[in-house]
Image (cartoon, rainbow, N blue to C red; front, side):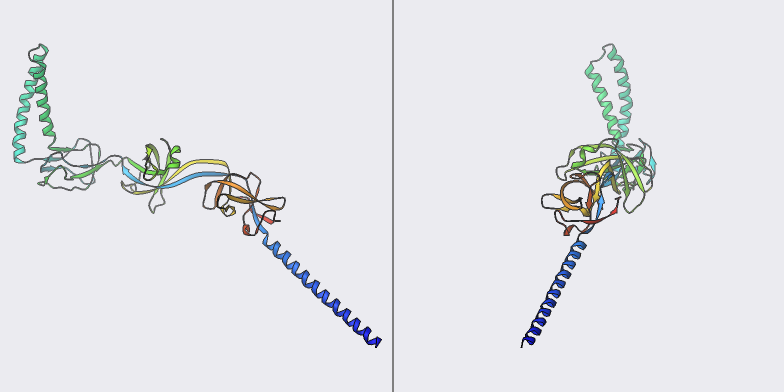
Length: 348
């Protein structure tokens, strides 16, 4: 009886020892798995902050315009009797382009031309009389006024080139009856091109005369440059933009009045900017933070940002040169979390 009791006790002790060993083994395995998982979660990459060159640029849309461009219309109605509108050709300032005429006007004009010669003689004689007080000042002025009126009537039957330029497409033919609203053609300068564009209000203070800008045409790789000559000196209240005008320095057949342009403005550069990868920034409701590695632990630091680039962002406050910024695994980290990191690059 005693012998069987002893065997039962021994078997019970062995079973108890076995259960205890198995229990501790499972617990140890769980602890190891937990530790391994925690370690894997905190294996991150980092970037060491250093001074970098930051060029501040903005891109806006613009339009090319001829430096001078007008629609040619006459001041009075009449019939076109002569046209000198060489389409696509250059003309000099003062060149007679269109002459208006009809029978009534021709008759009147001939009379006025005859009267003009008479009035010129009277005017000359009265000028001599005026010197010796032979006529009154009023009579002298009246004759001069009549002479000027005749010249004005004659001038209104002609259209002359207002400046050196290129004639556009002709819209009238000889014999056409035109009115002051009839478009004859256009004339525009071809040796001077200006570039008009607008910049957001916040950049208005840095735009000034003499500033260089670069631009390219739509769907083109060629780069051109221009120099700012003036601004509107007032913000558009509807768009909150400042209108800017620049003179194009480049010459190309691609530069055509009315064409669209992609304008790039270089607003400044900072050789000591603190740039970090954009994916290391943690946006929050009222602030932005980054995770800085200090003494092997994670620390959340509130920062202020500046210029944003496609892959980088400028930090203006909160970090300094030499800080190690965590760039991956941000969602797994908490304040004072132990870090296992590697530096992926020392350049942006």
